[in-house]
Image (tube, rainbow, N blue to C red; front, top):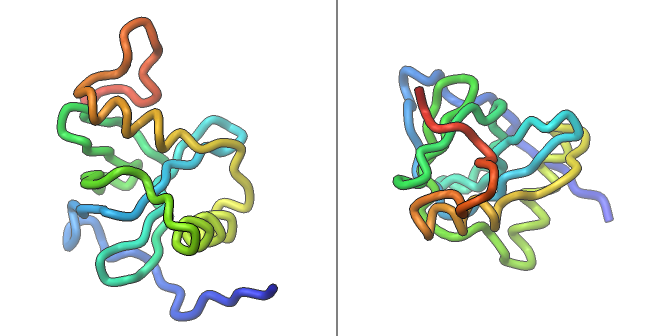
Length: 126
């Protein structure tokens, strides 16, 4: 099966879109350990972020290297059609990813903190 992504464009400048709320998302890990948010926006556009820098677990907000904040409003995407589309778009942008920490991140958001005795996947904002 061949899939073609049309209408490829960069995200708006951070000053024009400082924050985004997401319903459909996954957090993917590259081989170098960097994490990226792959998502479908409310507009239907697909996006892969710059490297994730930090996370405010109690509010479900992650911040990227570009400075944009994303609020994770729903559990990670599991739809059998949308999840592969999000992941294919991520592969197209990242070339490769070695893991998916979406559920671990959502579990922490749901609990309001990283599990006791575990290492936080992302640091808190400074």
